[in-house]
Image (tube, rainbow, N blue to C red; front, side, top):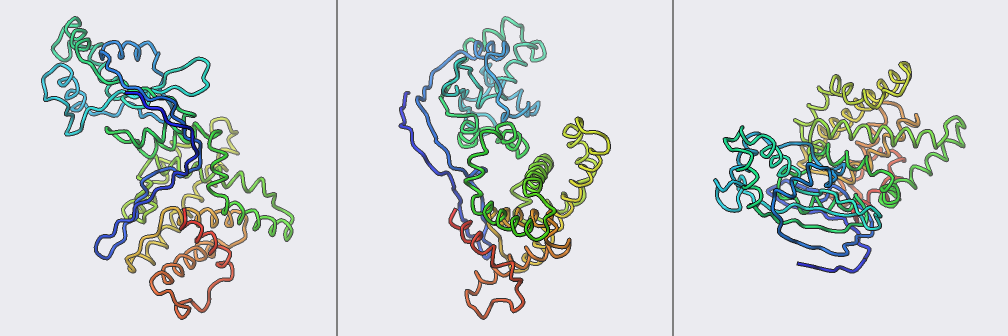
Length: 390
């Protein structure tokens, strides 16, 4: 099968609103919302003996991108796959899922025409284990080679504009074990230079609000450089999501799941230090200690804010859109680091704004507006309204 798709610009921003009983559950179908040029020159499917694909995998001809998972299949699933390729289980099934294909891709403009593996890492890893150690499965090496030569699997090759496009496509087409949040953010971090342009576009209104606030603070105090604060805010935010994705489900924690909130509150000690040690190795002991302490305080404040919001809004049976919450959190964190708000006030600031918007959604009337709303809330209403249109 060959398909040709013309180059076009598309904005990917998909949400599904699923209403059940009294609760509004908002799921973010795409872990990434961005503006990009999405280009597929050609898409081809072809059958190949699994043995030769494994050989290329063994020789390193199939490169593993940063967003791919480590070996994640259980022993039971590996055994089931080997039984499948040796003809011992039913056709086309693996734990109730279709077998799918091996997906590869090449980056457009790559002079070396490097072939990257976008899907099928678990199957190839299990197949290589079988070829390298056939006796563990009761077969000889000749028999194992014969089985893999007789077993043909679909190889789907595509041409992408960049690795981040391949990562997004992987999320859509993957029919096996989906990316964990840690793997997803690992991919984002690896491709960060490619992401700079659309981060600026996606958070345009937020950056404008932050820049306006920073100019006011600089002109008032004259002590804080915006570039320093901006760098620290982005650095802490990235580290926060690295750690958060490593330990729990990002979707659940940002959807105010109480179990996930408690998990973050309890586990941010030892696990955090283990994760950050690699990031702090190049720093001196004093700087590393200061960075670690600063990040711990950042984690605690994030957790406190989530708890405060959850406890106050949970009785109302309301769920807040993920994007809106994260945008408000960005503003709150930045203001806290600029010392524009006190430690207690910055949490109350965001909570009051969220509470006001929830009340307004419930009863869109001027009578429902709180009497003592902070004047700073007004600067975020436009950001909130823009978020709702994304």
